[in-house]
Amino acid sequence: MNVVNETLNVNSEAIDTLKYNEQDENLIVKFTSGNKYIYRNVPRNKFLSWKYFDSFGKFFNSNIRNNYKFTKIYLFF
Image 1 (cartoon, rainbow, N blue to C red):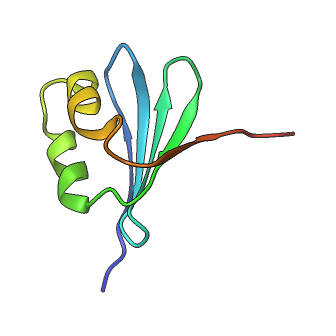
Image 2: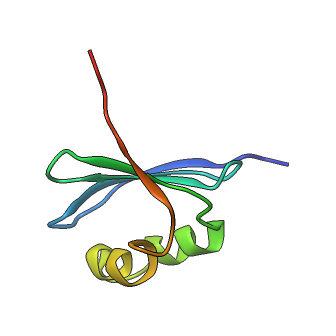
Image 3: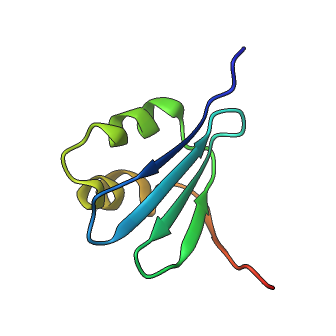
């Protein structure tokens, strides 16, 4: 099985970058504010649908936000 790790820089007012790991079904969303969240158990077909949706923000609000467990990512240097 080929494991797909994909990163998308998106054109959105609220969302900057999406990173998806097919093996563990984790989706990392980086917002334009700089905040990053990891959403767990997001199926690949959901990620693929998002890639081709006309509005990243609308898709996030109706299909990802509040539908998957998430954790804010804090980086300490």
